[in-house]
Amino acid sequence: MPFARTSDGFAVHYEIHGSGRPLVLLSGQSNSLHWWDRVRDDFAARFTTIVLDHLGTGKSDCPDADVYSTRRFASDVAAVLDAAGIDRAHVYGTSMGGRIAQWLAADRPERVDRLVLGCTSPGGRSGVERSAEVRRSLAVTEPAALRRALLDLMYTPEWLARTPGPYFTLGDRDMPAYARRWHLRASAKHDAWDALPSIQAPTLVVHGTDDLFNPAANAPLIAGRIPGAVLHMIEGARHGYFEEFQDIASPLVADFLEQS
Image (cartoon, rainbow, N blue to C red; front, side, top):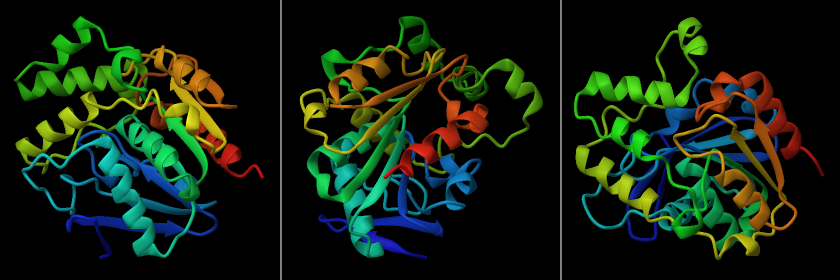
């Protein structure tokens, strides 16, 4: 079971699947590498995929300390690449993983080949926040009600009706409550607005038109901020576009990454 060691001594678990040019897949807030389980084979058929458990999730260390931020998560990704002997990789981040990917591309341009930012936000004052209604739906304390709210934000009712679980985007069930709070804080404090224009990697921004969890209005903001970025909105998709609209999203991303 491979682990990378971060600059401050924590262990980050990662896995490698497939063959071809390296591709890092970065999952969302409070989620382990299983976030990608439903679609990972789409990419492992064409790339050497690297997936990891963010600090606080999965098999990685779970410190209860103020060490969590999207920018430090990006440095953890670099540590994973070092441990795997990979100098440079494509990077595809969704949700909080997209926030992490922004910092990785801005801070360590030599490590990022092509970049895909999915259902994410620039954060800070320039980012578009979710509505008060969505915030209220996520503030419920009853587990079943929270699960229903998350499923409604991730997928359309039609897809849920024909797609049995498990649903891998609802959070790492074994994650300690304190780590969830640190992840929430890290994501909420993200602000890469000033760094986005420095990103050199060819960039694709993907978002569902019906995403209320991370409002779709964030996508054109990011695309307009990164030089030369390409924007693709998937009609009718919610936050979990990469699963529900897998037949559109996976080829779209893979074809972009394979461009010379």
